[in-house]
Length: 234
Image (cartoon, rainbow, N blue to C red; front, side):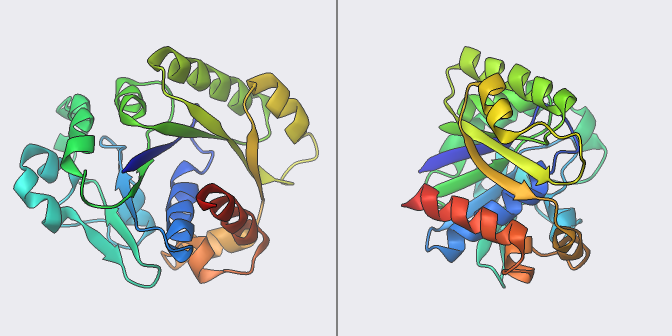
């Protein structure tokens, strides 16, 4: 089993959208994959996939491992397995972020590939998810504030001794003042794995509650994501 954390130093970079579509792309390439919403305080994966209120979620399975099977849901069209978080406010305030450290033993036999959708920033919740990951992909947009926050996150990963696989630059082409991918790579000192273009089809996919790689497989964003997944697996 390999645990891949998708994280960002700054909110609003599209981590959840990319985590969902990368997981679906892994499945499309034949890799059994489970996506876990590791943002326990503000979970969004279920919202993105049209199941915001589930009867059993990650928090239940962490409290009682016998509930794991009930916490696993299937996005039937794409084949992606999903463990969403619970939306109730009590789960955002009970300070159980360190329970994320139980995930490796909890899901050890579930799928060979686990993808974590992490909370943004460098909160204790984020750091707990990064600590259990085998490797991390950092998401940024091509603007300086997001890049600087990505650098801070990379430094925290290094302190945790969690390898950073590289960075995904999201929403390329949205603004004229963007920083070039080559400069981002030089600033962050990790490889740029993919540049995902700003693509209206991504918002359309969110509206119909599907991974954009599934609902709009031929759009430019999907092609970039599928290329990354193929390189990852091969």
